[in-house]
Length: 210
Image 1: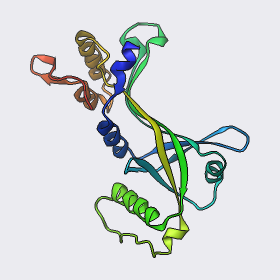
Image 2: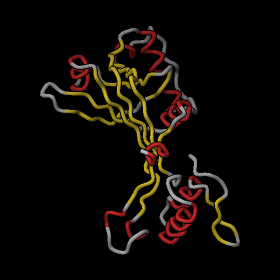
Image 3: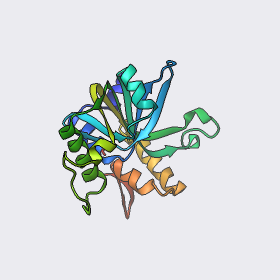
């Protein structure tokens, strides 16, 4: 429980910030046979709800009509820590640095044209911030050509592991081994771990953060 508390994202603002930095989320609905169906989706989090656009027909829409209880998840893998970082042969010592947010809530198929327009414009703003498109208005035909799924969170929890669970000495040892492994993600991982490279070697410059 103590470790879980150290991994929990306690700030709602940080949760929202992370959500809208990510391109792909996964919606989970329950199908007619009681099986979970998980689908990757583009999404935007605005006004305390998740919006996604979809074809007007499909299994996930039918699932939501039958059972409005929805799961939604977003994650970012930061770096993999091989087992040999901490033990020469024990594969169970492998670990991953990550950030994730899990939402449980109510799924709604939006019919209001103004709300659908808000969702579509917000999605375009997120995924095409450079512009180059005409904003949608409620009278446009395209509003009828897509479905909008809204997820209203009942619970929203986030976790992150970017080195804050490690003692300072262990954090420096992991950072050194990441550099030796020389993966494309190593430099960014060190930054998140609050570790800087100096002429004298690696030093902890700040607390781990993302």
